[in-house]
Image (cartoon, rainbow, N blue to C red; front, side, top):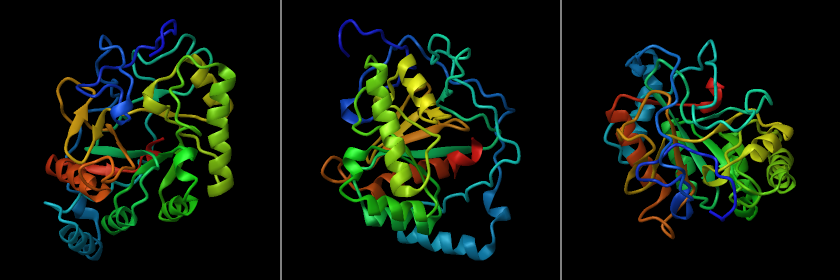
Amino acid sequence: MRAGVAVLTLGALTPLAAGCGKDSTAPDPAAGGRQPLAAPPARDRDSHATEPRAAHAARAAAAKRWGLEQVPRAAPPAPGKKPRITTREGFEVDGHRRLGLPPVFTTVPTDEKVVFLTIDDGAEKDPAFLRMMSELKIPYTAFLSDYVIKDDYGYFEEMRDRGVGLNNHTLNHPPLRGLSYARQKREICGMQDVVEERYGHRPVLFRPPFGTYDKNTLRAAKSCGVEYVPLWNEEVFVDRWDYREGDGELHPGDIVLTHFRGRNEWKGTMPDMIRRFLDKVTAEGYAVGRLEDYL
């Protein structure tokens, strides 16, 4: 963090310092607490009860093939009524509501035991990961940066064709907080243009690199067509989980972060990371939902 730059207070991560891997910038540890959920306690439902027998059998075979401890719960259907998404307390910027800036949140209000998997940047392009997620029918949302995807736009084209939402993580992944409005707008709108040109849609979801932002970030994002700024409540790696909340637990509606990484940076592969992710959420009775279905 550079001296002289006004710092936006973000929620404390335990032990993770603002996510995005080893080069993260630390938030203010004084700001804690979960985003309030405007919903009743979570319902633990049997997701297999409404899943066609053949579909469940295919996923059971895939779970065995990919070395999972249990068959993951089927993704829930999109809610008939979308929850109201608001900015998490302590994550606001000055004039947030008055200016109509996109909400910044780490959880989605829901009464279902569901979490949301989000994957950042696009550095690793593992074909086995695409196969695994398709065979298991696990939804996820990608936040892409042009500087690491431009060597293989086709990989993410295939991902899009499999129903994955491709969203904005800036052109070059700089820490945005404290940069000029013009510089931030170039990073955000520039990536909007890349996704639109390459993948045929203009994202409404944006995640700032390292989870750091200021009023200029959100103003620029809004001007580029962004409607939501999802951060995260947990981060999963090949060898561990890190938690924003002090209780070190999953919660209904939590957004989970991970990255496109492989053996050059992790002690394992993306399928290894997905095994760790799915084994935990399944054991705790959670399904993995599609974030865009709730927004």
